[in-house]
Image 1 (cartoon, rainbow, N blue to C red):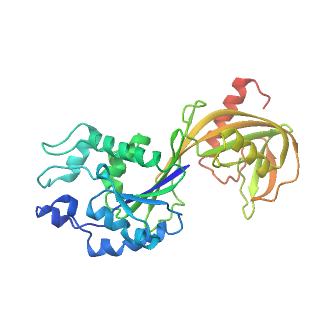
Image 2 (tube, one colour):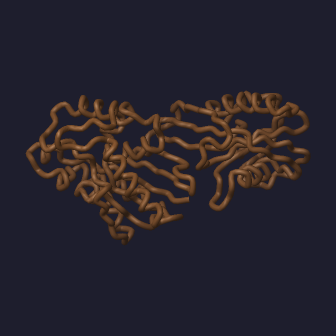
Length: 341
């Protein structure tokens, strides 16, 4: 896995650009310069191996405090630069941006289209990933440039998402890449906000259609009922599952998680379908498995406290917005395959 932390620059001095200064040299404001500490603190424990950036001053300066603290050079990549709007100041930026998001080929006479910005940023990102496989990377970037990168991997990201991000400076986005592409996107406010009330969007898909899985989920049958597990310190239940570890296939991860979280010792396990989740700050993909468990042993003593069988889904669920649609798809899958449910 290769993890990339995109850092959208801190607050910059727009008056400099309005006054005719080259956009590449636009500086941070005093507030923006101070908020570099938020970036340095966020990245401090991420085990960063390399720092890249747009060559524009505001992007470089935003990651400079972290790079200095970590004794890492900042490698400026020209194709990571921000979109060029035009050679003159655009008064109604919102109307202009809306036109660009509605038509990725739209641009002003001396500016760039979103498709052009996306193409060069993705090309630069692909080169960085190819040359830094398995590493943790920081990229100093910009609002529009970063938004086109997100859109490349998540086509649901559009104008409304872009506008929701405009005032967030600095802002972070974590992307995880495997050999198949982008497996996960997490958007992170600096400082972080309470996300407990977020709504999750869950979309199921045919097996093998999503690829680049980050997680696995297992619906297990045991003695004629569905088997769920409860983590220590919780009173809610969940289906076994978790992250796919480096070097594991989705099937290997599903079998390991089933053993670790239920104590299953004798079982058959089969991939069933894919799903993705999207909420305000994250997007990720997973594969769902069906397991026929013949025998349970003792729980290995990791994070799970107990297992329990239910006829359907538990009343108390750890992930109440995710489990029901997955269970509904699993019931349909079981019926289609002729398994005894």
